[in-house]
Length: 160
Image (tube, helix red, strand yellow):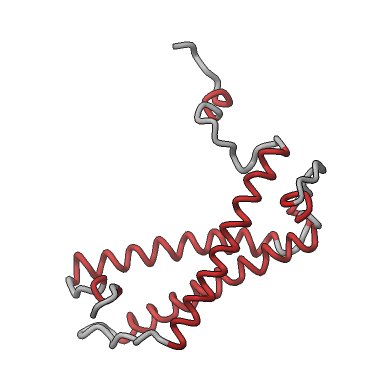
């Protein structure tokens, strides 16, 4: 096999990268990104409505320290705050930059540099924060399941 450069290897899989310079690929990636964000917003609104109106809140896990219960509630609340904040900052970037016609209207103009718009900073920070929360959340769930063995994951299913 011929020796390839790092740039050649990065394009072997034919999936465009988000930091690509190709404006058509960049618009396609952004289009998918925005559609996913809209879907997440719809699901989050349904979840909040379900949580307020229908959901039976589980009792605290027997034997759990009070700080764990409070931390769990705080992390869940922060998930919602960060996700809604990311959606709001994404909407703000689209509105301030005028990128919507370029992304959804098929306009061939180049996408703007989103770093020039104030919502870009909280959007990027929120993404990193969300990844940290997901890792923390998964770690806590695995801790409860395999170390504490308190069947916390079972409480998340439909029948309790």
